[in-house]
Picture 1 (cartoon, rainbow, N blue to C red):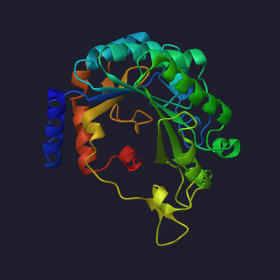
Picture 2 (picture 1 turned 135 degrees about the vertical axis):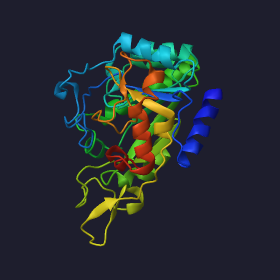
Picture 3 (picture 1 turned 180 degrees about the horizontal axis):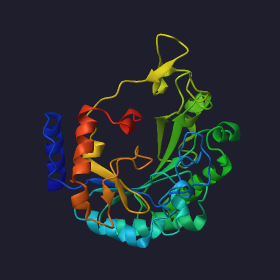
Picture 4 (picture 1 turned 180 degrees about the vertical axis):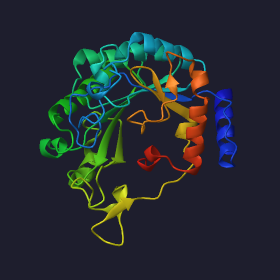
Length: 317
C-alpha cells in the first residue's frame, strides 16, 4: 500500500513539473519468450522486424531461470502484478507454469496473454494449478477466414479448443482464474463483433475485450482499418485519402508505475519500446531500484511528460 501511495503521489507531482521517484515498480511485464509461431502482419516479431535472430546482441529466445529469479527477488516486496507477456508467445517457454507458481507464492497477481496455439491439456492444467489469476486469449475472428486474416499461420479451431481446455481445468480445479477473450477490431472481423458478444461465454470465456489495432503505414489507409472510424486509432485528415493518429494525452501513468523486463534482462519503460531504444539498463548488471531511478529513466519520463517520445506516438490509450 505504501508503495502505491508513493507512486500516485509522485505521479501527481510530476504533472506539476517535478519528476522525482520515491517508489518501486507497481507492475512488471516480463518476457517469457521472444519468439512466436505466428506471422501477424502488424507485429514486429511476426513480420521479423524484432526477433532474437535479428538481434545484434544475440538476445535469447526464452527468459532464463537466472533472469527470472533476479526479477522476482527484486519485485516481490513492492509490486502488485506480473504480466507474463511482451513480444513473443509465452506458452512456448516450458518454464512458464513454474514462473507463475513462484510469483503466485509471493502474493503477486499474475496475467498471461497468448495466441493459444501451443495450448494442450497438460499446459491448461499446469497454468490453472500454478495459481494464474487471468489469461487473455487472442481470437480475432469467428471464421477461419477472418481469424487468419490477422493471425497468419494460426488456427481458429485450436484457439477454440484452448478455451475449452482452460474452462474444463478451471471447473475441475475450482479455480478463480479469469479467462478473457480478446478481439482486435479489424475490417476483416467487423461483421462478427455482435456475434462475439453473444458467443464468448459459450466459447468458455468469462469476459470479452475489444481492442483497437496498431497499424503501420496507415497514412493512405490500411486494409485492416475498421470502416467505422470510432473503432480505429487513425482518422481521416482534410484529404479523405490521408489518415493521421488521434491526439495523444501526455503524462502516461504506465511509465511511472511499471517496467518491462526482456528475456535477457533489459529493463524497458513500457511495452511500446519494441526495439529496446530506451532501455534503462540490465537487471543482471544493476539492481532494479537503481535502474528504475537512473538518469536514463528520469530523462525518458521527463520526455514522456513534455515532448512525446517516438514510442509514445505509437501508443493510444
